[in-house]
Image (tube, rainbow, N blue to C red; front, side, top):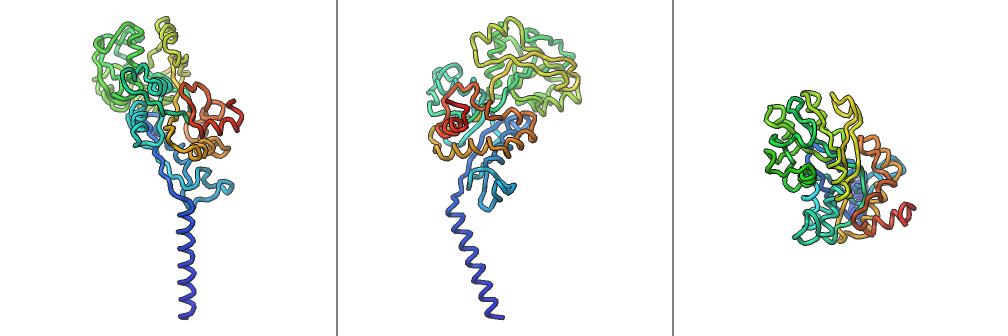
Length: 336
């Protein structure tokens, strides 16, 4: 009996030793992805991507139905203030990657537009273009707002400072001959703005993100709201100046009470990182995002997940690709 116990203990010690060696061989790496507010689209999409690219020690192999991510990588989606905040955090080294609107990424990397007068984030690099982000302008049905021009004098939330939504809202107001001084501005995330609207203390709010957005879907199921069109000659002229905006629309039925298509504009949602990250790591992450297993998870995990495809990944690249991502796309034949 004593001999058996000794053998058992020896075997256990050997197993532990092998596990330690395996963990050492597969060095753990932590990868933080900045997203947005929990009520928007960035956060759930970030969670899907984090799960897809993670592959902690001990995970089942990809071909056995397990993780198809980067060996040893543990990725997490981090709630944040959105595009501008994510770019600053990547630049400061507190995030490894993050989501950004294509316009914000371009301005940051080139030191123009929003970043004029600030040091350019020259090391900002693109991993993938993900999906179009539609600009929502949501108004109380009884607020008398049928167009952007009707926002004058109204209580309007433009989203939090540091968000891409705030930048685009200002551009749209300017296209219609207005500034923040012409409205009663507030700076709230969409879920907070929706709460204020329920209380009758908010007339309208902007939100940039994939549809249907959770906070807006919940609000429209409980209260009479409308999507205000962002269209007309003012918008046509705006798009001539800001070429990163694309024509878009919300299909009828996107939100409760929306009986017809509503015209709007959109920007691209992108996953960006720093040139300082290793080519090998970013290559592995990009490869993990676009294997067949992950593509199915994306398509089934969120309404915008079906847009995260290899073909869309290289569209609208306003900033340079990270060498690791570029290598993968060239191997996959979608980039020359």
